[in-house]
Amino acid sequence: MLDRVTGMQVFSRVAALGSLSAAARALGMSQTMATKHIAAIEERLGVRLLLRTTRKLTLTEAGRRYLESVERILSEVEEAEATAAAERVEARGTLRVNAPLSFGVREIAPVMADFTRQHPAVVVDLGLSDRFVDLVEEGWDLAIRIGRMQDSSMVARRLAPCRMVVCASPDYLAEHGRPTTVRDLAGHNCLSYTLSRMQSGGRWLFGPDARVSVPVSGNLRASNGDALVAAALAGQGLIYEPTFLVSDALRDGGLVTVELNEPFIELPGIYAVHPANRLPPAKVRAFVEFLGQRFGGVPLWDRPY
Image 1: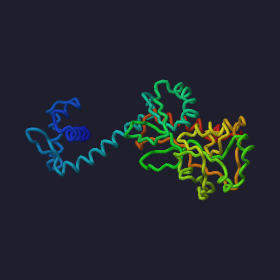
Image 2: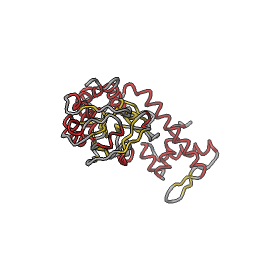
Image 3: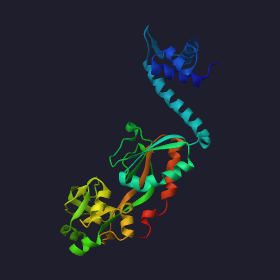
Image 4: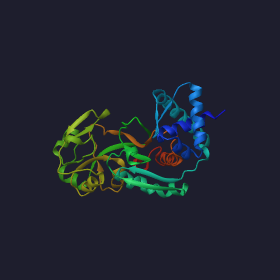
């Protein structure tokens, strides 16, 4: 009796390639054996699965329905085998990681040395961009994303919180005064990050669930947070940025926190995101686990200034 799983593999390849000979070559068997597998399936099922012409093979309606089930079964077989072997699979190969520019430079790049020492068979291709990338279309294994996760087709692991803070340089506050309420912001030069919905349209959001919307204006808008930090350090105005961007400046006194009468918002978090493979590659699992350990608990940027 011919092996049923092998028969399914033959049928799947024939459907994909449109040729018994091509399927046989791809599977490393003779065309005669491939033909026997197809014949055995059709005899067992009692239906015609393939229509044979002089040029190619096409699927019947029954063949199309059978193919859907076959592909699901073969996928589950592969997953079962991969799961059994997962503990001995070494993280290796090229790991393509995309991260927001500022966070990637400040927090991801500095830990790469430790990760590659732990996993010497992995080569990291680190892409830095504030653009929202399509992981599948652009071939990324993993992305670091900040804020709300909206794509349910992705697996997301929360790595760290992402708190926001309003701050300015001591020189700016000495010259223009210190706001004490969110309404006071209307009289200040507020420098905004254009890629954030929390700061778009000339409004900053505060309070629980970002329910308090405050109109602001300023003479600088930028699509990069570090550019706004540099402007604030030079005394240009107030900024409303994540603590990972301003923690160094707050510690050394270049910037000071401006406390207001509404709480600063906290974004849902910083996440590692990857396509929803049932069993992601070992290199992806290793990197996500590494980041989870590195950023877990209270991250360095949120420890007391």
